[in-house]
Image 1 (cartoon, rainbow, N blue to C red):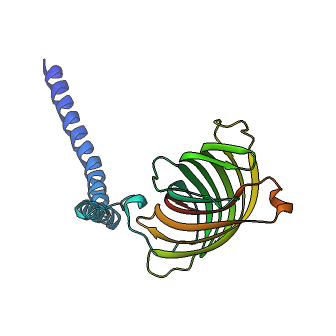
Image 2 (image 1 turned 180 degrees about the horizontal axis):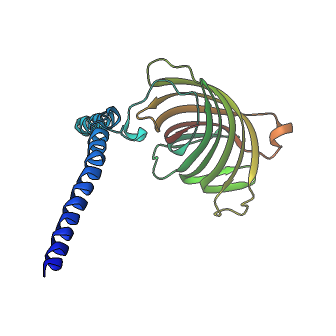
Length: 253
């Protein structure tokens, strides 16, 4: 009995000793962890995190930039270095025939249409223009061995123009070119063969940029037939005077 009591006392002392030893071992470890927690590196990291958070909040409060509207809706800039333009035109026509007769048309919606394609470079322009004209004379006309009441003319012109700027978006055109034309009377007479002509074309006009991409061009052009060695003996279109209002789309390069 006494031996059992001694064994119990011994075991109790052993447990107390183990608990004290564990406590003494854990206490330094906990101290080191606390020192690491409050070390300068940890403090600096926490400060950096706080500053990053504040910067993000400030950026979120900043006003966002508004994108500019498309260039098509902006007014002209006044400076156009180089670009391509093309469009359609509506005309008033006056044709002088070889026998001295004159044929006029002042109805832009009934006398055909004009097309143009050009390269604009600073104050110069190189252009191709095609005029397709159908004019009702209202009477029978005869030139050479052809006759009819309707004149059909197709004119192709290659031209060079000088475009000095007079105002911010307003330009003046001075140009010249070579023109080849094909003309005939509609099939009311006995002959419908097309006649070809070569002519020198002079141009005078004004161009206004309503927007960056919309160019309004009003042009007066007059063509005079060259000699018979270039136009042929059977040519019958002596001259033409055309006033054209072009609606052009301008694409900057």
